[in-house]
Image (cartoon, rainbow, N blue to C red; front, top):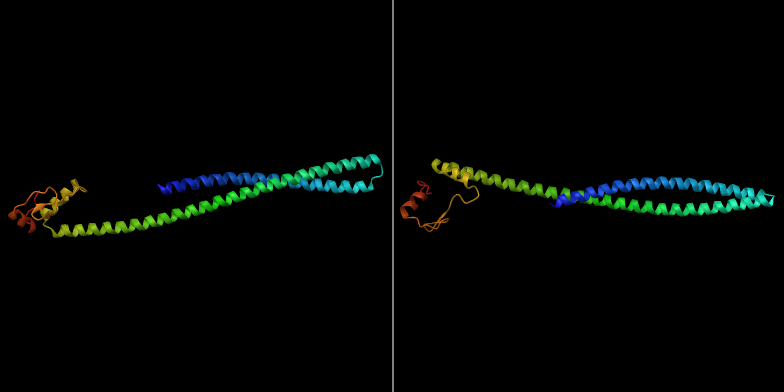
Length: 194
């Protein structure tokens, strides 16, 4: 159950990263546009300043000063927008990095859990195989009639105590007393009592 939750979180973070990466690309495109506009505005401001020095007519000076003022406002606006976009780009890059670190850490956790479970499964299967071999050896060493009856009982009652042990001349399952003659026959493997 834990692995399923981790995988769901990984999928969620991966989807979030996909969205963030497309946002990042859009912001970077917008940033490039703003930077080109800023460069154009700065170039225009520089030209206007040069022309202002060469201007001789008052009307020309006023137009150039107005153009310079507009260019400066535009440059200031573009610089602010670029700074805002750079801040957004930085925040998205941090979020993408955080998500990537989470995904890597969660994947590592899943790998660790998987290795641990596989190790436990191998150990448990080894023990089960040893028990199965032991049962097979005991069945081979037992009277064939008893082995057949045990096998049939075991098929019907696999995990419900198909056999009972005898303790102090009493059945361990139903607590009935067993007479001495029957007990001797059972102990010598001549009789299987049901």
